[in-house]
Image (cartoon, rainbow, N blue to C red; front, side, top):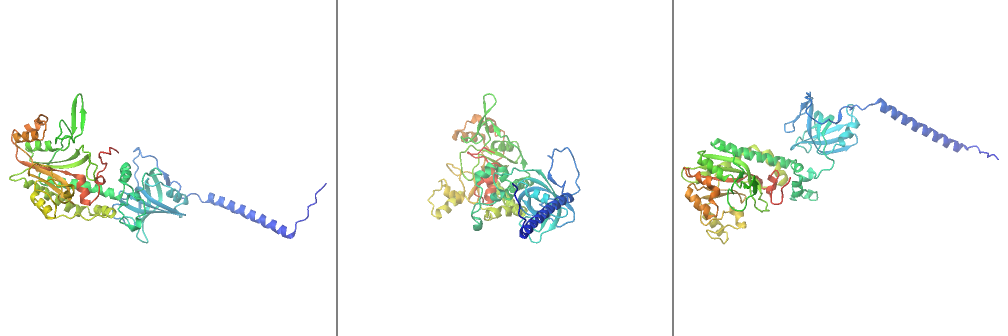
Amino acid sequence: MTEIQEPLSKSAQKKLLKQKLKEEKKAKKKENLKSEIVIKPDVSKGKYGFSPLVTSQFNEKRSEKLLSLADDIEESTDRIRLIARVFNSRGSGKQCFIVARQQMYTIQCLAMASKIVSTDLVKFVAAINLESIVEFIGFIRKTPTPVKCTQANVELHIDEIWVLNSSNPVLPLQLSDAMRSGLNTDKNNSDLPVVNQDTRLDNRVIDLRTPTNQALFRLIAHICKLFREYLDENDFIEIHTPKLISAASEGGANVFKLKYFKNDNAFLAQSPQLYKQMAIAADFEKVYTIGPVFRAEDSNTHRHLTEYIGMDIEMTFQVHYHEVMHFIGRMFEYIFVSLESRCSKYLNIVKEQYNVQKFEFITPTLVLQFPAAIKMLQETGVEIGLLDDLSTTNEKLLGALVKKQRYSNSYDMFMRGEEILSGAQRIHDPEMLKMRAEHHQIDVTTLKQYIESFMYGVKPHAGCGIGMERVLMLYMGLDNIRKTSLFPRDPKRLTP
């Protein structure tokens, strides 16, 4: 039995023909696309990708000028090379914008598909992980309008790019979040995430990359530089003292004790005090030292560390220990004035994040005798006697007072109401020194060589110990000393 097919209607025939033509057109378009791919190769081939690990096996000379974002940059016809981190990026279709960062300096880079830049290169650029170290090559061009970078009026048009070292795709914290203060000073950004202190310190290497931290630790370096400058100009000798010592340098229990071979004990120096004075006894006259100080104090406050950098001074005087006190005051004036004149760029970067009040100081440094300070407190209604210790509240006004039974030839100095140093005239008579040591229940046998150094004649002298991190914290008006310590140590933190 055969099945007879009825002839197609004219309308069905038209429909079938239309479908056939559509399929032929689609096939032809597909074939054309294939031919285009063959005809148009990747014009950026060999100009992007992951660079081999640098092992210093080759010393290749490059023709492109190496760019530093710290310099003033202008539009140029020269082909340049920039090595920087990828701070952020945003790609859209055939173009991708990248903000490249060197320390605290930034520039906008643009990869845009063109006759000399392929879409494959643009896609590669858009996929680079943040914080990767990248080599950008291209030309500097003016921007149509200023951009939010330290190089606001120019951008780098790239036609070649190499990833020198790729970062992990997932960062423990975002630098854009770490660059917010968390002080809610900007109501428009109050809902944006900020990074808490523990997260910052647990991931300190990433945290230190923020512009504010880059600026802070350049300020620390300048404080040390200015400290040295002033003292060197005044004929001081820089010395280096032991940090492993046989006895607690200041007595008391606040000292780290450790085993030192066989059955001997050693201690980490609480200060360089003994050795500064022994240097004076050795006729060095004026000495200073910069180095670590260790304090085994279980103080979990905003201003205490178990290890910090001490800047210490010791010098002889002619008539009165006030000579030393006023010299220290003039030194701080020099440091503060020089910071303002030399480091305004860094100061502004820190202020931009933390919005703190400028540190105000007067010259010459204000000196308050302790009885006068007590009288000032009494006049404000504070009940305090002439020999009473200052409470924590009163300390904010006048600084900390070392507990003593009577007035002494000592001095403290303050910034924003908090102590930054303590100093005093030293005892240079060996018998009096023994008596005071016994009074404080210190075993004089542990200080034998120190005391003996005064038995052969020594000039009257005085000095001080300064906490470097505390100086910067208070100068900048920051709320925590951990912000000014590179890798802070406190009773709860021994890493990283």
